[in-house]
Length: 211
Image (cartoon, rainbow, N blue to C red):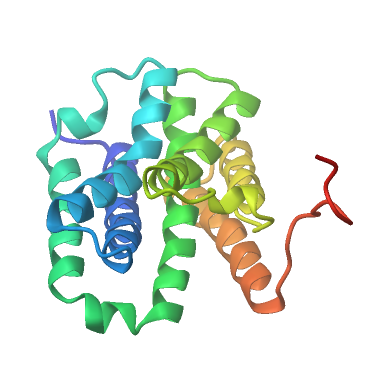
């Protein structure tokens, strides 16, 4: 049976997001002077981790990455390319940051819409969108021995949650899936980029911590 427009859109967005996130994962490995295996592992974890968590939680098993070769090819290709050309890629720091924001925005939409497709209500579906967007990055940072970015005050999870909410709410209308996806994507992306440009951050504790 040919894929529907809905399924095709989700798969396309998913693969783009996986590739973009996988590049950021492989860069972490390179900057920590780890070997090519580590680069591929971190690329795979970053690109696929959020989707794995989402699929297990919504009972969409086995996860898409284990049933569709395209989902495995995307992070492997990203990891190899980043490892081979990391000096050039590493110099594109601002571009990588923007691409990371793009990946975040893509995943919050695809995660939320897939959760809706599996019968979840608006609130849990939006949460699944956020988990899809931030899960891979959290796993990457933990494996690399770093505090996850979302715990250091970066406005990362909040834009993802808002983008997912927009996508879920508009999905309940008669708007085309492309419009729904674009609205959620734009909401997350604009917020995340504004936070980067203007230096916005989540509140952090004031004064010395009591230990």
